[in-house]
Image (cartoon, helix red, strand yellow):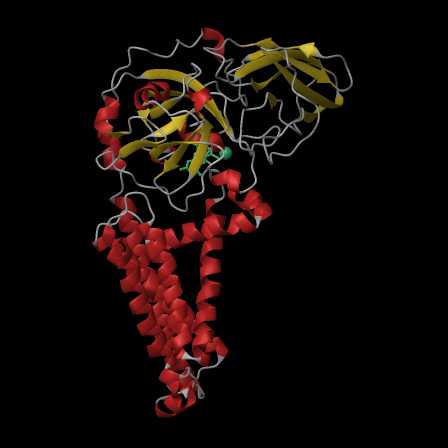
Length: 515
Ligand SMILES: Nc1nc2c(c(=O)[nH]1)N[C@H]1C(S)=C(S)[C@@H](COP(=O)(O)O)O[C@H]1N2
Ligand SMILES: [Mo]
């Protein structure tokens, strides 16, 4: 029957007649137009999110669930470019496939674009605070894409060199135009992002200030991590394709779920609450022994415990799920947030409003826990639930439900592979056991005895601690090894474990060739 229809209008009803190569190219052009047009329409309708980014986000969230090792390798390194290129490649392969399918039957092509649009619309609509019309850019984009697919494929097959030129010019030109339009729109959206909003934030004065830094907190040695990590050097880890732009004017926090008295706060109301200011060292569970996914900052914000007291969690609400505007979730034990530690909704980092990439306008900071179970950036809601009822983002992907930071230490100077001159050398580094505190750091040269390092002063048990040890270096190759002990008397284990599932263990060591 379809063949009969096809008899009347072969190309439109059954399929187009181009060779697979041209069809794949047409599919790419159609996808580029769909995404480019959607991007432009999104900007025109005032959406803060881009369809490409939404679809990319779905791709990212879908892939690691099934391919866990891939997730570990790709998503926990902070190579955003790899993430973006990878997403584009997946989309390109899909688009080329849709083009080829369309040559079998045009309807298949439309169905492929429809599927694409469905994912895009769903992604846009399920974002936090998405307006009801969030699907419109995707819809318009998909319609434009379908039109382009038809225009490129439903024409006589490319046979002569001349036809080939016409086709390539049409498809290539369309693709390039869509690309430029999309990029321009994106550039424009980023430019009118929330930088100005951030600059306008006035950080309220805090009566409850951080303990002043002890004068000897920082040895100030070259190569040694400074006690306070400057914002621009602070490590970055997240699953977003582009940094969410959340204006304080639109920001609200909903605290809900298993509570007696749900609460919604806007940014002004949050700023009006009593605040604390504390030094807290954040660490990523993916940090390898000796790695740099750790940083220390002075944070200012509102105590989470105060907010929980106010909403009154119901019995059994043993988990607080923090959710970001882009759907990332972290699950933190309710009891731990109320045990007296300085867990906060932070609005400032080292005296400035939160940098946009570190979660502006509001993020969580919880002393003692790895970031993936506590440090939600671009915070949108806190939901009281139970661990039995919900697994947060990385838990679904195989990481441990609980993420207390393990005791660790690192040698910063001399560097691995360094060539210090013989004679007196200062070995130095940092050690951390957040919320337990560091009581001892020891260093071993080659197979020698453990020597106790001098510990720098710290404002609290929630930060890392610098340490130094004078060593009289003798010419030749040496291995320096460090280990730390926490205030509970537990020395970090020598047993080597990878970051997955709950944090790396083992002793850090460096090899030096003394001149
Ligand atoms: N919204 C959001 N918040 C997030 C994440 C994320 O992927 N999305 N990653 C978490 C992880 S794994 C870590 S280690 C910290 C890192 O915070 P930073 O980028 O400010 O250093 O943020 C946490 N908060
Ligand atoms: Mo992390």
